[in-house]
Length: 121
Image (cartoon, rainbow, N blue to C red):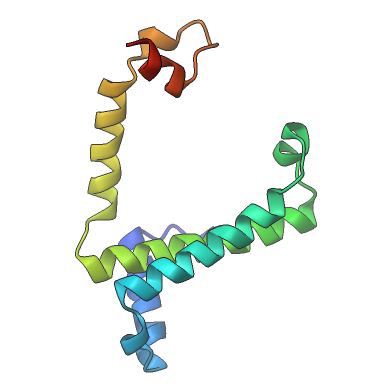
């Protein structure tokens, strides 16, 4: 298994784009639109599955899910590059926000969902 960082992945895809002279198409707007399309394709692979089926994907479907997840990741990493956002730092910051917003002790019973906690405050 490859142990690339997001930076290495971004550099590889940036070269891919440059080698094909696609830079003019790699605008934030276009990347968001492409990302949305790929999320839709990923969503389609899970549509109508039961929770159990979604956790136990057959190998052929799992391979297709992996391809769509890779597309989503590539577009997200490219969007971060084009907008100058450190995606890993932003994700860590969002984790910190969520840890404060949804304290673990409020969910220990395992029944409360995030929207229910916000409504009870």
